[in-house]
Image (cartoon, rainbow, N blue to C red; front, side, top):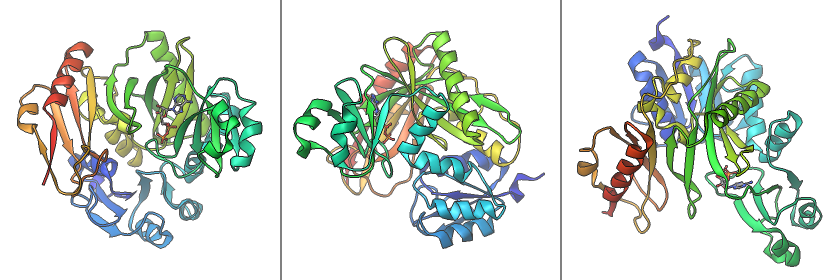
Length: 384
Ligand code: ADP
């Protein structure tokens, strides 16, 4: 087989699509993306179908041009994908899984039904149901999440139960929402799982995520996570079990909370390469992106071992900088050993927009943390 003859269609041409294509370039895989103009992957895709990710006609056009379809974002036209799969098109992961994942309510019900540990929750259709359902949950802090359409912390509100019960005007959503118990002082972990059609399954080493509380975005992650081996094993087992129960084929990020009693709760699953796996490009023998390419091409899965401890910093648009920009400090940052800069080729910035990321590798997690702090100190963004 010759990978250059395999036509892969990618719905979405953002940074994840760009990195998937980059990982396929050594094998000359032929990619077509469906995306609006001027996206991060536009310049490196072999072909670019310009269109909206919700446009069923464009998705069909993409499928007609390609042997296999994948996607790098969840908010796409599911009906179009179901129809294509029914007509025999290979779509990885299956739209049956995407349909569950697109709806945080269905996702929680799936976890509950299959014994995948997750926080207790209630589903509400609108604000009038909050009172009754909140009383069924223990704990004062509640995470309220829009069932559909949220991303990167948007559509998530952390609320206090009694504030909501005392003053219904404070209820932040009047749409279908998941109300779930909040895990206090949680350590946030992610395990990336890859599974192919032969049923081979691999996990990447667990990563620990640190969040920018204001933007609700992963700001910094480190691998290996600062957890004991039994917890690492448990996190991987839970993550693999969830993907097997979903009958998932593809690359999935399983996000979890670890509480102070070392209990693990699955928060959510992303059916695609994930922000928490960017570092795998340099830090693991096989990256999450190459792993997906292997699955798309029906090849065996690669070795996921960490070559060295690594951290990843998201390069987010700086506050106060909008539109045209310049990144400063790269001359200093690139002088450090084991530092890898990825820029997503976005023409315009805005505060907290994901503009790139930086992977930092070192002998120990301590070295990596120190170097990451230096990288952060030197990184800047200038308004043009
Ligand atoms: P999104 O899908 O937009 O990333 P998440 O469900 O991951 O939304 O929630 C965003 C963030 O909010 C999480 O990464 C975590 O920091 C916090 N969070 C969400 N749910 C809970 C919870 N039940 N307990 C503790 N923290 C939570």
